[in-house]
Image (tube, rainbow, N blue to C red; front, side, top):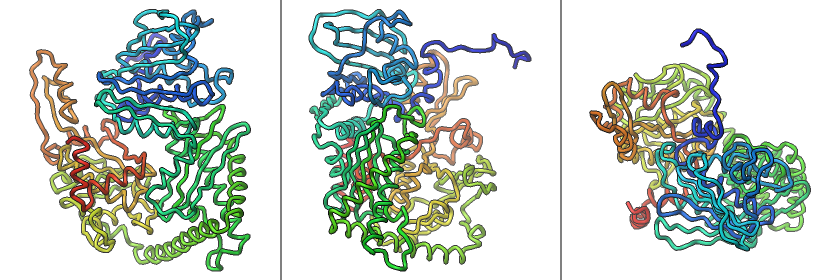
Length: 625
């Protein structure tokens, strides 16, 4: 390290170099989620044209070569010379961070883009990026690679058409896996169609030879909510629906169901805000106040229930929330949470007033909703009484933790993490590799019970491995689940990097999803990513997660001598290797478990892990395994 620190030590990254240097800062990660984020950025630009009344049709095509093409019939990206850069506007937009037409409101009233980096980031992370524009009476084309133009903007044949077509192919130097998931693209694209009444979006999966699929919903989110509650028992036959536009637009549709969870899909300018934000919180608050006010006005709350808590109103609540705002303040580059405090009070008041009017106008449905909420309140009170009793009896819980648990010494939940491993051998290596202060290790004996095939909660709770897991986590399950009692901030499933390890992970995920789903919903569950291969080339050592990554590393060896070893399991790794590759926060990779579509996920668990072998066989056939 140099003793001096002067101006010559400062690195200045030009153009789109910062994106290629630190891609995760712009797309969240370079795994599958980050890969698909490239598609959403390009798709959202097309949807922004529709949001502002300039586009009626979008086509997204998954190409045979693994690339993606998005075409819209909007205005087309400007091609005239930019006064500041002296280059065509399209080149400025695609090669410059924070360049675009969404920073003032002359070109767009509302848009999903806040940071002005979407298209340029995709360009930076693409091996090939091709833009075709129809506007100003001509077709215009320009090709790019890894964020840089491969030539000048070309003026083509005259045309009366208007719109933009973007093709890109992800850069394999950035992404270890570049195969797009057609089902994920279909699901997200359909949600865009639901959110934009009358917008026609067509998906063409040329890669897999599938027939084109077209989405167009004239009733917007009222059609969407029907899809969300399909298969569940609804309490209010007609959903509560609100659409209001002033300085911003709010649209929401809500059903109460007999389900015990809450499922709200929230969007800001057609961007899925998976972590919610001010718009979702305001809607929930407005609904709570409306139901509470109606119940009090009609004297429907019994004396033993002092008041209706928000969680009572939320139980079984399924809803869609969509806002269009001029200046969306997203938290983070990947736009997962909306932070616009100025819209909170207006939304809350609008929802409260409209929902109260809805309840008063539909007394039969309103009474059914209140009955459903009161059931939740009674269950909450009974659960709290039971928890208090259990807490008193188990005040020495810390002393009665499972013997297979090597606990961490820190009492700070936010700093601690639990590794769940299978077998004595893996458990032994993990216990030696861990950071004793913040990392705990629980060894399970063999595969846990497949809860999807067991209807009896009593039998599930009597299973030794599940009992050990419940005692370790400390937060209970089912109706007695209390996230505040969770003893670890991260619950990490660390199994072998083979088929058996994957099976154990799926069994654990089935149990967690069915009996403690909030662990997943609140972002506490992760999958460890141990390597399957170790590659030695001289003094250098490389690790590969799978066959594809191994082949990629070997392809770069040229004529170097190397040795490839395959780990049979975690127990075969020495503690130093396990620590370096899988457990050390500074060097490991974790995969966060997230649920994007609760209904589809529930159906998948039922088909894959349920009792019906025909359904399981059909599922495997669909996956072409």
